[in-house]
Length: 462
Image: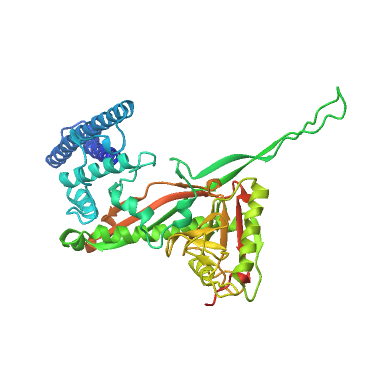
């Protein structure tokens, strides 16, 4: 909100400078001719002068509002310091909102609430509603307090931008359909501001030691070499055109419908970005150069054969990364294949109990269509519908990913929502825009990732 007001102030100053230029233009001819202003020039001079005075009043009012918000921010920062100093954290911390101490108040924009996020965006932009602006500013503070480690920004003032409601930020991570399972399991970091790429240095080749051949002879001397890996920042976003009548007159809060839908699709696209993107410096897990590739070719695949391939994929991480993998990701249909597998006596090979009387290859955990479903060879298994199932020569294969997820870093910003009326003002429409920035470092340790592929992972039959 503060950044938005600063940008408004800059715009007002530009408008004032333009008016001053026009005022000076009125005086150009009289000065050159060394005469008084004509009646027409006097009227124009008076009009421009009054316009400048009115603009100065707007500038003064905006400066006053900015000063108030800057003072609020200083008090917020001081309150946060005191809260840390005296141990008041989490739910026990009192947040100073403007000049009011808020403890446990409901969120400004909450599901089922009476206030509408997009309606307030439009009212603030279109009508300059002080109430709407104050609610949006309060929402900014609520989100900042709940997500202190994320980089928050409201830098684009072209149409009015505020951070989306807290419920929406929570939902886009947890409740989107289908969920961003793989993206949520890798290491999460806030996207640094002011950059379009993130470079991480690494050792390409290391030093070396060797046994000294004889006393007083030179020791092994091998110079290390260095390189770097780059992750380019990608923009993921979408837009929706809505009639102004729907926003202002509808009895429902249209933002709950549109934000959830945009957020749900954002979750899918981000998860797909992490799993299978294949662009320069934006490589997802499936396309990392030098990963452990395990091929499973079989026209009549069985759970037992797949079990062996998974063991191979795991051991390749042990022997290539020298650290254990942490998760197995597969498509829901592949887990269903394992659930349907029977031994020679007709007993299931994947059971709800790990200590069942028969030998099992996996144990069921939670029954989910996405997310954690059980364990296999000591590792948690997660199913993710966003893992592609149209790969291979027959375009009918899925993939199984085994990875040490801490070695993969997803840099993600805070999602932004904006409302623009100018492009569609002639038809009383508003353009709503949702976007975010993300970067993926999947190539830090190629040997941390194993991918099982082949005809053995074609569409299973049941």
